[in-house]
Length: 401
Image 1 (cartoon, rainbow, N blue to C red):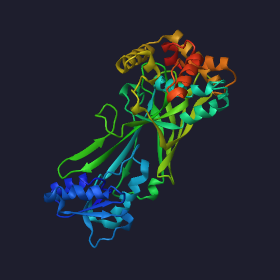
Image 2 (tube, helix red, strand yellow):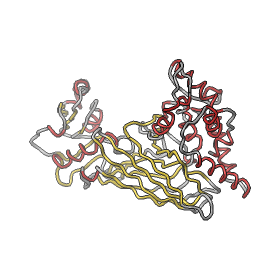
Image 3 (tube, helix red, strand yellow):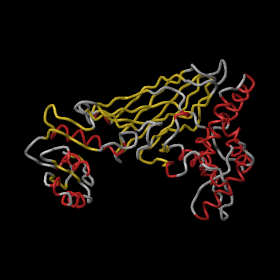
Image 4 (cartoon, rainbow, N blue to C red):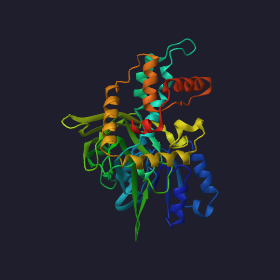
């Protein structure tokens, strides 16, 4: 049985592999094309029975030897198709039957990416304008910042941004229940592994799934550094980064996925790190993200959104960012102290409440950004507002924030 057959391509692959009967179950209107594809491949299609129904509504007399599906969404669990897959397992799979996929693993690691942080901050700069066609937008600036930082970021990132080994959560799809998927908690106790100080900007996430072959298991992975899939990777970006003085320090917390009625999850992330300065309190940062409302960053040239209009290519931007990261890892005590002071200054302004155009300019300069992307005239106005607010923020200061 192919659960959520879509076009029917996996059903046809099953027929190619020698299945004597394939139930292609599809609830959406695409099922007409599923049947057309089966009819257009008569040698394989004759083994297919296309069923237009939700799997919960299917009634067949026999149980099946194999379940196949593509139930994975962003961060594995988005769209909540896994629950339908488990229902089909309980209802239609023979004892000892095979599931493809059978195991899912969610991996998470700390990341440091100042460019991404300033990019997301820059998106809210449009709302600093106090004369947008004679309308003062600035009262919504704080809400805009909160809104942008509530979006998970979906793109493909370089492994260089990772600053810890990953932690993992295993979901055995052969034994777990739908109730297990309502609340998924991943405890975090991660050691920072850098050559110098860094700012932890949040948690990077990816997943892989296991197809237990007869001879060799096959893993489909969405990991950074591997060939990019249409799932990409995902990052939970914190509005308030955690400053880590150097390698060996640990960051604890949890990633909590809570299912909601819109076929997705609310993502609750809490991180606690070392004091920003000796004798100070531990740093804690938290955020709530809606997995259903992501920032699809892969739709923009990754890594150079904030400099696109300045004529900087993606490759140049990524190379410059990597060079700055390497320099940062070689800082001496004086530069580390300067970094700590900048972090303290940023933290004191972390309320992100707009008070005046001058304050917005200072915040924009600290963020080192002057670019805003919008649509039509509003986008042009937003870009002008972003440039005015940004002032002369340098790449170096941008990397430090």
